[in-house]
Image (cartoon, rainbow, N blue to C red):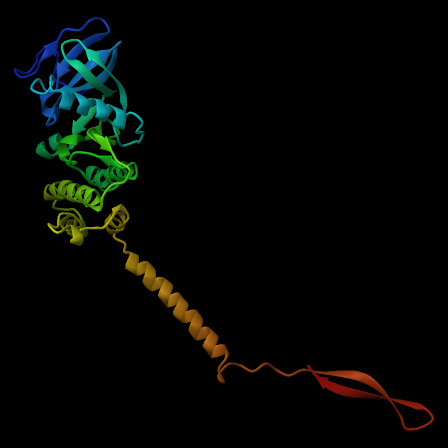
Length: 291
């Protein structure tokens, strides 16, 4: 059973335990994982732990929200990434109705880790690498999603691999520049909160977070590539400086070889035999030809 799940024998007062039907057992509400329009549950399907996402009661009978959850299933079903929770099915569950069924996330949310004061350098490293990888994948697949926040970032138990649990509800032909910069803004908010609880973190990461969160999108990082470079403490400018310096050195060397200061090539002389007749007997002489 996931360590994020309340105990079935001693449930919290706000946790709902629903009866199963043989196929579905131990259906348990996880209120701390609920989303704006959804409730989140854990359950066993044929004895295997999974997670369930279903519309809140206030939205269950609204055709607009019914279409929304179906659209989310269609969008996410074919997504496959190491740092995104996989969707398995979309079906009716006793007592809940239609549910998106995902892999069980065996671990803790970043929100719980922050609130419990258990942040480590490992978590920071995963945020600056694995979370960026997940955002990059989402953008390359043109996925529209709700803002990323600590509540939707989970670290799995044991290896603490980062997973996003709320990664999209629509897919477009192309993402707008606004969509891209909003992702960078959301990432900056997450990174900033992590840094607030890790004062020993490198100072340059604070500068990265502040730029991501700039109120003016034009002053944020323009894309994931430039964000990666900043997180790696590298700059495209450094690359261009190195290339320019190498070109200047090559041009200077060519000009020097063509100048009067260049070493002159030593002349070589080859003697070729020639015959001249100065007497009845032939006399051999040599004519010098420069190379």
